[in-house]
Image 1 (cartoon, rainbow over the protein chains, first blue to last red):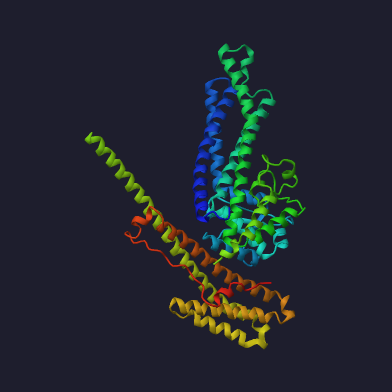
Image 2: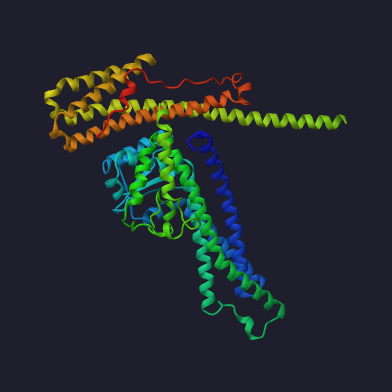
Length: 325
Length: 186
């Protein structure tokens, strides 16, 4: 892994992320439209209702997409109770972020601190020009400067690779899908929605039949869609962590810093209260403690921490540090 | 038969032209990146020049017994700020870094200074500035490496030189500069 040319993986990753982001938006809108159509049909029982459902879902999808694209970073930061800081509030942190921005050739991101004693960090934003890096006060207290540098380099790699934009879009996808599914399933629970007029005598037998099928399809979609959306989110964020670790080492030329930091963060037993399921995939180390152990593989947002540390330790011995100019 | 051949030739020509345009734009982008990275080094060097007087002012009173260490830094700074050839520039930068490193070493002799927050802040600012300079150089070398590799690889190698793209030089540290990057902050 340490042998691969940095620029190659870096540029490829940006290109892949850009293309995937577009694909994701297209697939998402198509899916939301179909979902809305089926739900509309199942509820109202005729094509007019289906079109109404389609339009409604499309509007909800587009609005939530746009709102997240332009304000998602602020929402995530607010939900994590992060406070923006300037140089004088935490000089070491600010300097380290500035150093890593210079090493990566990226503009200086905004810097935030989360008042929480559990050590962790994340980056968010729609592109490197609108990026934010947030760390917990516990991270600042527990890590040495070299370790902090490794963590920030990892976050700046997410920024430079456009991982932050992609993670945000995937977040919208999961959020909106869950929202629509919940909306539908709840409506179902409270007596089959507003339009259940079919029962009275069935205006025409064919329509009732189609409506029944649509109802079954809608229920299946409503149950499976959030699950698939979540799996997509998880599989994507796992690959990214390895690449961000490798890119981080290209910035600091010091694999030991990041390896030590990962060890400290993962060994820490405190629970990050500011994190929840929706923001877990953003952090450098999965903040939802115990979850990783219980559901290895498919359901974890991050690759096993032992493996990440082992790869970094291997780089230490492999002599990537010697190539520093 | 003649028209088929003609169409094939035209298609090949169009593909080649499109390919050349993409390669050319890629080279221009990379060249601009190296220039941008080079300017970033100057920005950081200038920042260090601006920072030093303020920082020295703040800690002057702690180094009353070590006046020569402070004057060394001031002198090295004003010398480095004068325009020179790149080689001399690198040497005077090295001297400045050395003088700053010297101050940290001297500070080690005063145990009571080690816990002084003003001094610790001062050390953090100076060593971070040193880091920023060396990271700016590292980034410059990274971007030069990309650019040179692109120029030297097929297919750009065929026409890069014709279009005026030439390899850029790496930033090489001279003499004591190599050591100065290891200024410690603990």
